[in-house]
Amino acid sequence: MDDRIPGTDAEWRKLLSHEEYRVLREQGTEPAFSGKYWDEKGTGTYRCRGCGSPLFTATAKYDSGTGWPSFYEPVDNDAVGTETDSSLFMTRTEVHCSRCRGHLGHLFPDGPEPTGLRYCVNSCSLDLDQSESRGESNSASRKAGDA
Ligand SMILES: [Zn+2]
Image 1 (cartoon, rainbow, N blue to C red):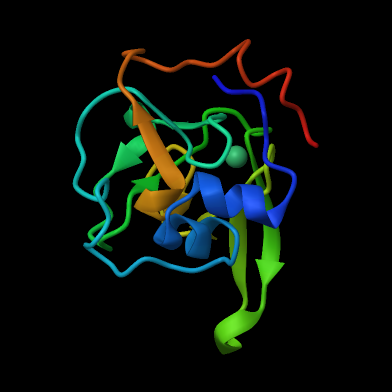
Image 2: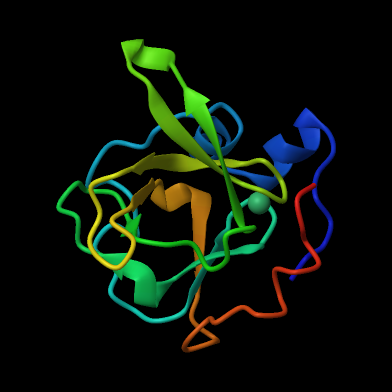
């Protein structure tokens, strides 16, 4: 994992594609059914496209029918942060990477058991790491902490 998190806007622009920058740094949303992971069924760990921090496991991914990758829980409660988002004339819960603050998507209370939550995430905020088959993350996310 690359531990270096870009500090400046210019560095982020260099690291990310235009679309990734728009989502991660400007809280954009990719069009439904357009991203590379909404229909992805492979195993592994979904990492933050911005900083490589593990965010979700493929095990917690489910087909929500929305056209965005959806998860019922993050890899660790410390891995993602939430914030109230009142843009677009509605109140939603925004979800971001707690390490680099990159925008991931939104959290809705209509997910499946056991959590009843739906983390609706943009594909371009994620990087599927298939090298670990099941990403239980007891140690990895500890050191990242809340920045
Ligand atoms: Zn991140």
